[in-house]
Each structure stands twice: as structure tokens, then as C-alpha cells.
Image (cartoon, rainbow over all chains, first blue to last red; front, side, top):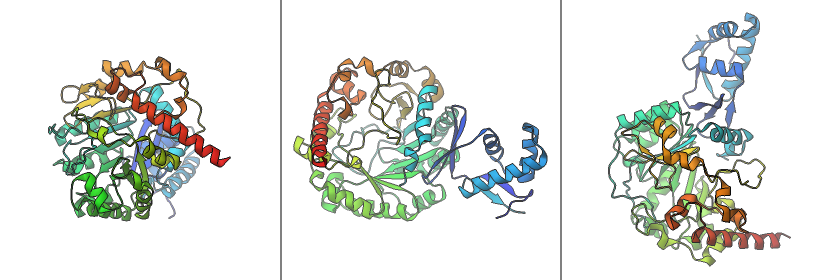
Length: 94
Length: 355
């Protein structure tokens, strides 16, 4: 599934997560593996608590971190694809 | 393996962080003491019938989210007997806990299975005491319970949800431990067993009358499979011998138990009351309870006799059991000593055979 700026992303409701000692821990049910996120990943994970488009997320990353719009979108797409492969987010295409 | 996450280095790090930051990472929620089986070895006091409502549980769940609890074990008694079980389960699931459900499976009908399918837990742990109706129903006191429990295991496995079949080794089933393990695995479940039988919370002998003799215990321990006698969380990280400055256990440090009527205890074993969520928030109890604070100050070095004991590496000593059996949570107690002695002997015999 190819992502584009209008693709909507939201956390999978099957993922348990908490912020433990400054890091976000994700655990997908049924039990499989634990995941943790880096600083940008942590920011994006909380952004997709509610449905957001890839375009929105790229904008949000630009506003929070010092990166260009193009770079932000590339990184967001790569990150969301990774989460999607692990079943941690749900995608909706327009 | 469904519990692969436990063997990841990240899980070990999470445990260390939870100890360091004082987070109740693992919480046991007992929805009711009532049960539809009559197991003689059970530790639950079924005469205490008071339960909390959905509304009260929701307040507790919100508090646990604030405290960063990740693992929520829903248990009982038989938790499916709570009249608002489905609603409480869904509220917990919506709050993004990793849910583990302990049940005997008798009430896992189509609607409950549909609930689990739509709101998957991390795993379901189902008690099974035998590989035949005669043994299992004999333990539970309910004719037909074996067939229903086995059907429940199969149904949950079919949903793609990991199932742990749990057993306690006691006089009626110990001679069949190999058959029971093989049977559980043939159902598609993981298995773990325990050799720990304790006094009932009702102060009746409970499991004490069902404890194995030395020969039976040794047979199980000699089999050498850790799944036969699980007691500790293992992370898969390289083991280092426990140090004098280590905590005695996780009770009150990374875990608490919330009983059906709202009382809070350090763990499933301790009878020390730390507070009551009907009169105080769970956050306040976690942060201010003198009972929990006193447990947090204890270290292994405080149990001085254990540090120099030749059985220490084979001992699964439980401070709460020590307290109940001797009145001193730091002391040795006969059952821990007995099991450690037999475990050491079984291990040494096995090592000799390996050499």
C-alpha cells in the first residue's frame, strides 16, 4: 500500500502502550513483541492517537524539529510504513 | 512462542525502569471472589462476595493509566461471573492496557468469545488440572468442567489468541504431569505449572492439604523443564546472582493487587492491606501507603540467613508466604526450604546425568 500526503493514519486499537521512564513502549495484542520509539517516533505516535494525514504529520514534524518539508514527509512515510508492517497503525486512503 | 517479548532485552530494561521509577507496571485486578468451581486447593475466600461496580472500576483504571501500568491481569475468583465483566473488560481495553485474562473457561460462550476476538487480550490463561475428566472434574468438583474448559482452550486458540494452560501440581494430578503437559500442548496452548500451594485467604488450610510429598515433588523437578514449576519472571537476559542490595521481590514495587471489594494489596500473596480504592484513589495509595513504603525499603541483605544459605540459588522463597507462615517476612519457612532442597537435589542429579 503506497502512502501519499492524503493517507490517513491512526494507532491500531490493538496496541497497548505506556510512557515508561521517558520512552514510549508499544505492545501489540495478541502478544508478540515489544517496541520502543525514538524521539521523533514518540512524537509521531502521540500525534496519531487520532486520525491524521501523512501531510498533517509532515507539517507537525516541521513545526517541532528542524527539518525541511520534503525531508519530514520522507521520514514520516518511512516511519509510518514501518509501523504499518508491524501492525501498529491503521491506514485509510482517500 | 507467545511470550517471546519477555525474552527481549527491552523487557528487561522496562522492568529495571519500573523498579527505578516506582511504576506499578503489572496490576492484578480481581473482579470477584465468586467461582463456579469448587477446587479444594484454591486460596480465594469465596465468602467475601462484595464487588465493585463498573463505575468504580473505571475510576481505578483511569488511575492506573496515570500511573503508567502496562500489564493488567483480570482475574477472580472467576472474573466472568462479575455481572459487568464485558463492560469492565472493554473499558480496560479502551485504555490501552496489555490485558491478560485468567479464567477457568466455563463461561466462555459465543458472546464472550466474540468480545475477545474484537478486543484481543495479550493472552488468556486457563486452569486445567488433568488430561481426563476424572482428574480435572475431581479437582474442580464440577462434573462436565473438563469438557467445557478444553472446548474453551480450543476456541480461544482458534481466535489466534495465545493460551496458557496453567496447572498446579498436587496429589490428584502429580503422577500424570507428563500426560497433562502433552495434552495441553496438543490443544495448541503453552503450558506452565506450579508446585506452590498455600493456605486459603479464608484462613482455612486450602492448598496445604494438597501439597506433594518429597518424592512426587522430586519427580516433577527432575523432569527439568522450567515450564513445570514456574515461579519467577524470566527476561532472557544473562542471569547474574542476586545481590545483597537487590529488592526482595516486586510486590509493592512494580505490582499491586486490587481485590474485588476495592482493597489494595502488594501482590496476590500478601495479606497486608495498603489501602482501599473506594475511599482513596489508587494513585494516592500507590504513592503514600505506609505498607508499600515499608516493603520498598527491604533488600535481600535484610533476610540475612538467606544470603549465606547453600540453597539460595534454588530457593523461590516468597516473603508474603514467610509472613503468613512464620509472622516474619524476612525469615526462612519450612515449605520454601523443602522445595529448595528438593530442587537442588534434582538439579544435581540431572547435572550428573548430563556429564
